[in-house]
Amino acid sequence: MKTPSDDLYQLIAGLSLSEKRYCSIYLAKHNADEENRYLALFDYLKAQPQYVSKDAIKHLGYATKPNHYAVLKTQLYEQLLDALHQYDLFSNPEQQLLRSIHQCHLLLQKGLFKQCEKRMKGLLQTAADMNHYEAQLQLQNLIMIMHARKYYRGVPERELLHWQGQVEHILADLTTTTHYRYHSSLIYKLQYEVGGRSKELAAKMKQIVGLPLFKNIKHATTLRAQLDYYQVNALYRFTNMEAEKAFEYNSKFLALLESNMVMQQQLADRYFSVLNNYLIDCLLLKKYNMLDEGIAKLRGLQKVAAFKRLVNFEANVFRLGYLLEMNRHISEGNFTEAYKASHAIAKGMETYADKIVKHNRITLQYLMAYSCFALGKYTEALDWLWPILQEKEMAVAQEVQLAARMLQVLCHFEIGDTLLVPPLVKAMRRLLKKDESSDMPRLVLSLVNTGSNKTISAKEWHKLATAIDTLASNKKSAGSLNLFNYKVWAWGHADGVSFAGTWTKYA
Image (tube, rainbow, N blue to C red):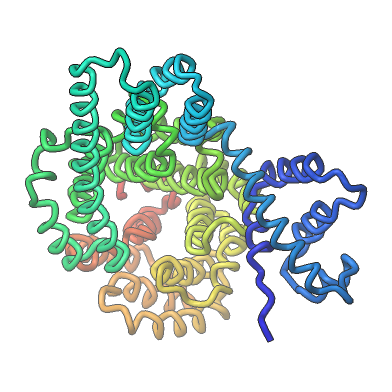
């Protein structure tokens, strides 16, 4: 027996709230019968947490006519695609251009040559502004069809020669753009296959980036080629840990698109992706003024229709904006501001709960716990750590989850839970056996464990802080400070100063 298709349900589930509203209006308008079976099926399916074919058939009264239900599903699927096409026309410049070209075809079919020619003049410029080579070729083809329909009356040879030159120029631009796109795609494919920063990725990328087209911008003779040039070089520099160079290339990419608002909206997904990378560069390089301006720019994109169409855009703006803000506040030791931001983050995570990938949610929760710990709010810190500790171990969030378990130990130590600290230390030591670069947290655990039986003296704290200083000078061990600054914590206890109060001196 054939398994019922859930294509229609998946399409409906993927609609945004505004798209669902538009589709409801569209179905009501284009189906005149009183029942409006299409709208009834649409309303039923959009309300279901999952698709069960038998339940839908029964609810709509098709138990004895399952074939009718199958036909209804197919017809509704097509109507929804038509509705989405109409919805997209209002805010998608590319769709508006293609629709206008089709209208020129219709005018040509009616023999309305002057009207067709008048419309095409504006469209040729629009297509050029959008760097839409396929549309430009369609329009050039229309010009030649119109000449043929008029039997070439009044068309001088120089005009035909000019037409040939225009088409060859467009084809040359298309060839250049395609060449860059192909090699850029090889880079992105490598990145997704290898993932993150690695020597393997850097070596393979070096071969491609070493080609002449990525060595000199003069080879990138089209706007799209220039975008690929900047984006690929930025990615390569970031992979090689050259943050300043990556920042320069990302800045040029953004400036290029910001100078062409039509293209910026047309390539909204790429602009958003590079803005994301640019903001990370700002954070790494401590260009905090630029970071603040960039975050404001990021949040301002929520008012632009082209960006609002991107999948989970508002959730991604929330996630990225607050990850950057929290990291910035913590890196500056501004834990009070980080703590204030936590309230907005908690509210946002409720709103976008199912739209934020798990490892990002875990990172935000850890940063909130960190800010609470720094201010001596240990119970609140444990509240934020709890959901992280309940998650199964994830490869992409392994370091954060391990840091969360370590922070849990320190919270209970600071609170004075003398009975709970030893078993937590024991469990933590088992976890750290797998980590070769965990000398620093092991030192901390040794002292914390003794603190469950006796008061730790200032001399012992000073000894620990000095030992951490020594480890911090070792590149292999220094990585332990990335997620929690044991150096600040140890020296704070040695000097009798709070974690937040001693940050500026020792961070």
